[in-house]
Structures are given as structure tokens and as C-alpha cells.
Image (cartoon, rainbow, N blue to C red; front, top):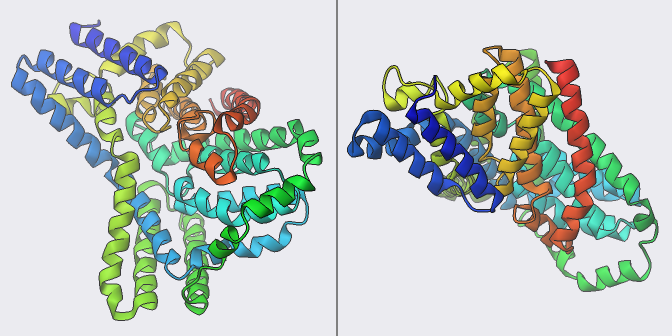
Length: 462
């Protein structure tokens, strides 16, 4: 039976979604309805105010491991930049760029490789600055370079996020299932969506690719003369840079092998990656700056955490509201016996909508897409995770599958492939193409990829 608190929560969710549709940040409505529900449920204005803080505190505790791993990986990338080791990682790919198709594939491979370990947001500028110029000289239009960057990084890699596990961590936390269940399904669906989208993007633009060359390439070279070359060769100490590249390669290879050999999953996997990141940062700081590395290591960590909180910080009050909808976290916030508001509503919906059919899967995909309209891609993950748990009737397999499908909608739309006011702007700026044109290029490939990956999820994963 739905109470007044349940209806208040439903209205809050609807207003949050409406706010996203109008491309506004949802922090204010989330905080406001967290306060209202706390006030009504506890019968006290003071209690309502306290709930706003306590809900955010619970959300912060649940999400801090994600913040930390993102901050450490960005800090590691910053430590590599000091001697140009970041550029050295991708420079060997230049020699393979002999044709438009090979250049397209190299950009995809480079973007995926760097984004897996350092996240797409800091990785895309690096890849764009170093790999786009030789790709364009090989005959790849700038627009197709931007498509490759967006679909491979902001789409496929971020939607799966199988190494850092920021996205599946958020989704799993709100869905109440082990993170490895979301990571496995999300990674699989992200690859299916990405391969289809990237292949279709190439096929649909073959004529444009074939017609690019001559004057257009010359104009690009003239407009970028001296800039890209300077960027590509800015190394303080190539010798130290090579040492760091080899140290990074060996360490990350060791991490990947350890994950499989020792069956390390979930939080343990994040702990291994984060520990390696800190140790590599220390090594990089001491190698680069000597005794001064005792000071610069603190700067690297601070810069990484500042980036993590800048990107993920607004998620805390949003997640706080949706954690009220989860039956496991709501009692921690409101007190023993408190219901999971969204879980209760989802249970009623599940009685009408079969949780294992196409309607449920495409419904979660659509909801994820709507929440992605805010341009972050991550703010909707608590929504789809909580609703997936509510609709699944307690079946963890169904919960994980529905949540992973919703995760695809959130990130492929809002993470930076179909929303012009997202980080897609950075991709377009690096490639020098209009962002709205880039959205149009991505639209059909992304929607097609998501359609087939959702069908796959319903047939094979439920």
C-alpha cells in the first residue's frame, strides 16, 4: 500500500526527470524532496533538515571508493605528464596510420586503451591532440575522428567502465547487487553497442571519407602548423619518460593478469588498481623531481581528487534522494522500519509489467536515456539501479540485467555521444567540428547499437 510519503517520492522522481528533460541540473529538486520526505516521515522540520545531511552522508560513504579510484587514476596521469610519458604511450601508434580505415581503428584502440585506465574525460584530449593530426593527414575527415573518439571513449568504454568500475559501482550500489554482476553485463552490452555503432558510423559515412583529401588536408595542416608538433614533442626528459611508460605498462599488465589469475572482483579489484596507482605516482614523483617528489606527490593526488569531486560531486545529493528509494539504505537514513519508497512503487509496477520482457528492458533503457539528458551520464545511475531492483521481484540476475541496460541508456546518451551540452563539446572542440553535427553523426549508430544490445540482454542475460 502506498502512503503519502510514497506519493511524495513519486512526485519527486517525476519532477527530477522533468528537470532533466529541460536540461537543468537536478540537485535542487533532489535536495528539496529529500527534505520534504524527511520532514513528513519524521514529523519534524528539524528532522527533515537532518535527513538532507544524513542522506548525503550515506551516499558519500557508499560512493567514496569510486571518487577515490577516479582521483588516483587522474593523479597518476598527471604525474606521467611531467616528463611527457603520457604522450609517449600513444606516439608508437602514429606509424600505423597509413589509410583512413587504419587511422579510424587506431584512434578507437588508443581511446579505449587509455580510457580504460584513466577514464575518457582526461584521456580524450590526449588522444585527440596526438592521434587526430596524423589520422587526418592519412585521409580521415576530422568529423570521423571525432566520431571515433566519442563512440569509443565517451560511449563504449565509459558505459562499461570495467577497470575503474565507477559506473557499475554506482549502479550496483543502488540496485543492491554485487558490482561484478553489473560489470560483467555492462561490459558485454557496452562492447556490443560500441562495435555496432562504430561499424555503422564508418559504413554510413564512406562517401564522405572517400571524398576527403587534397585541399581539405592542406588547409588542416596549415591551420594547425606548429601547434600539434609542439604538443607532441613537449617532454622534459625522454629518458625518464620511457622508464615511466615501461613501469606503467608492466604494472597495468600485472593488474589485469592478477584480476583473472586470482579471481579478484568488485571492491578488491578497485583496491588493487588504486594501490598500484599510488605506488606508480610515488615512483613517478621521485624519478621526475628527486627529493622534491615528497612535495609534488601531494599535488598530484590533490589534482586528481579535485577532478574527481568536480565531476562526481553533484552526484552525492542526487544519489542521496534515490537512496531513500532503496530498501537497504532508506532505514539507515530515516531510521529502522523505513520503507524503500521507489522499491515499493517498482514492486507494484512489476505486477503490471513483466520484469523479464522487452517492455521492461526498453523501459529502463528509455529512462536511462532521459536521465542522461542532463549531460553527465552518471546522475541517472542511482535511478535505474533502484528501479531495476524494484521491478525484478528480488531476482538478482534480472536486477543486474535491467540495471545494466539502464546504465547503457544513461551513459551512451549523457556520457558524451548524443547530448550536445555534455563532454561531447570537448571532443568536438579538439577535432574542430560543430558539436551539433557530431551529435547527428552519432545518432543512428548509437541508437542502433543500443537497440541490438538490449535485445541481446533480454534474450541471453535474463
